[in-house]
Image (cartoon, rainbow, N blue to C red; front, top):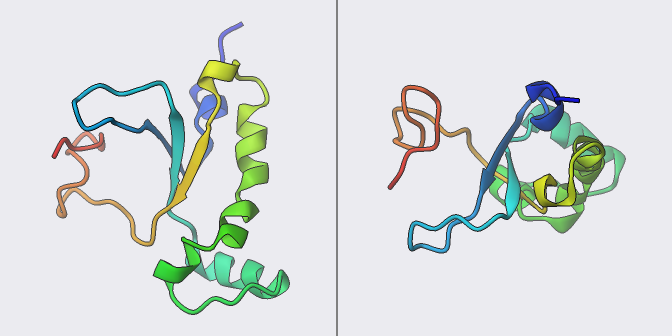
Length: 110
């Protein structure tokens, strides 16, 4: 049975891979997540996690762990080779103007 794109790519998640710098992309699926920072501040307060700046919050392992249940749900029906292995939280959204995305909203090659 075919999976719907919404099942393999949860809303609000960007799914990509990591590069070895030589143009080859190994099969390491990753989720690049830009949190809703207002909601994240509330979740941090509920979990006694200090929230000082966006930049600090996205690097805190306790904050990253808050997203693991969503990743686990996204991985449920995927084969091992398709499952998200790495999570990275980003402090700002990627934009076309800043050169991170193409007009088609694909990752821009640098």
